[in-house]
Length: 56
Image (cartoon, rainbow, N blue to C red; front, side, top):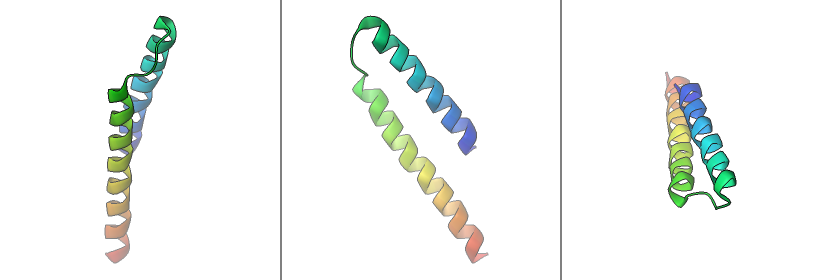
């Protein structure tokens, strides 16, 4: 699940970098916010999995 999510996020970021580079602009703030929230969520999911597994 995490690998799939990171792959999709990577695709979004690469696409945004290409679009920004093509148009000479900066990255959209919403993409940066998406990455921050997604990484926080992934860390939470992995931490919950590891914590639940070690208590098992």
